[in-house]
Length: 557
RNA sequence: GCGGGUGUAGUGUAGCGGUCAGCACAGGGGCUUCCCAAGCCUCUAACCCGGGUUCAAAUCCCGGCACCCGCACCA
Image 1 (tube, rainbow, N blue to C red):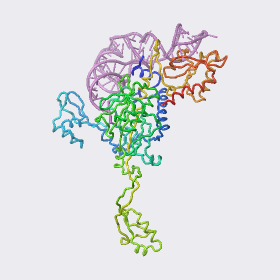
Image 2 (cartoon, chains in turn green, purple; image 1 turned 180 degrees about the vertical axis):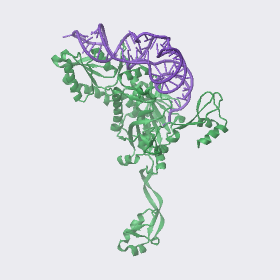
Image 3 (tube, rainbow, N blue to C red; image 1 turned 30 degrees about the vertical axis):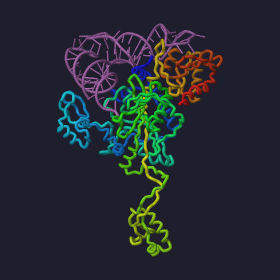
Image 4 (cartoon, rainbow, N blue to C red; image 1 turned 135 degrees about the vertical axis):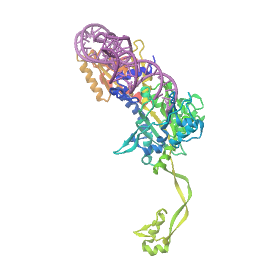
């Protein structure tokens, strides 16, 4: 039997996966805690993500601040784009975005100032579209959470709406780290913050959320990602194009047919699919949907969302966006920093540059035997450096001239092109739990069929009864397994059947039971969660056996 | 943010002016050689918060908070 979202929420609260934050103070909408089980599951999912992006794809991690000064988000466009002006109907209460209302009458309207906006609404006589009632003055609503840094007035700052900006502004050290060669990827796993108007459905829309983002930088003339998976283009996925096609084809075909324009987008779609499959998402309920032009973010030219089907419908869990050169260009313009990369030209190009030209006779007079050194120095100088000095002596103006000469340039300064796969970890956890939860036939008891490497515990150790030394033997086995680096769930309360059920409910894949035979011959039973089938094995064989069972799941990506 | 609904032990619920606030499951302790939430005994544990009406409020009214369903929003 398939489980619903409500069943997941009930289980999550009861068994310590997640619950609403701040409950003793009435709660606060849009914030959730991960409990003992949920925290372990979340870490396991993130470690698979890191394994793929960092270990296999050779991307580099970064950990940058959650709080960003205003300048960063001015440059990225977020302070402007994230501010909405909302106006309400005084009669029926309907809410509108003020700029959208004006745009309907003046299609090329651009926001300039608040006063202008108010005047335009008055002059155009805009009223409620539903009931014709008068509208309130527009209210400013910023989708970012702000704070002040330092004493006094403080410096206006925001909690980052995405982890991406921390990567863009650190482009130079990563360019150096990757030996000045493109393409390369930088990944960040961390929190993002948005002041959502109406957070809903537990982990689906949070005000503080976990994200895992990769910013991949390309030479604009060669946007290709040669990743770890050579077979990626033969992977079949379901694609929904913005022209309304719904097709299941290989990524290679999608490229050939022009459905996907950029090779890295196809590759990252494949990577997303493999990641979700590896953590145990139902692959029959995964699709990739291309954004319509009007729903694209301000920075993006093309974007494919990965959507997963749940009882709440298809929900977006990952976005793969072509951010082009937008962000880096913005940061160059706003900060003045050199965020270019140097590209060696195949054919050096000729350019005209201004140079100082020394007058040899004058130089011989002034610098004597060092005159040639002085000449070389001057002629290498940038002509913007006025009043050149050599060996502490000002070089008089009549000792040189400025000439324009033709030089060959071997490098050009370019702005990297960015493609970004961005994962919403909380939504992935929520939908994975729903895909994993089922009720056992007959009894109706819930089972979370998490894969062993995602499960909060790899194995449960259970004495058949907590007496006759069975519990002591079980604890010895538990300790042995912990020393072998397994995460172990030990339970001796209630009856054996209860303990199996409790372990099933939080997704523990294997249970080891210590019974009377264990005391005689050193064997235990090993029970598999979904089949409930048992086999008897020697306790010394447990570590190797379990390792093999678990590894099989980690390595099939 | 708007409209509608809901808020009772850890979970799921009954009670709808006067109840020791009931039940089931879960949880703790005990008994039973006990392999799939078995049984028996026993214990713990709740009326979302704040105001009001009333002799009396979990129950009626108002406000807040949270959740659910729509609408809007979701870069």
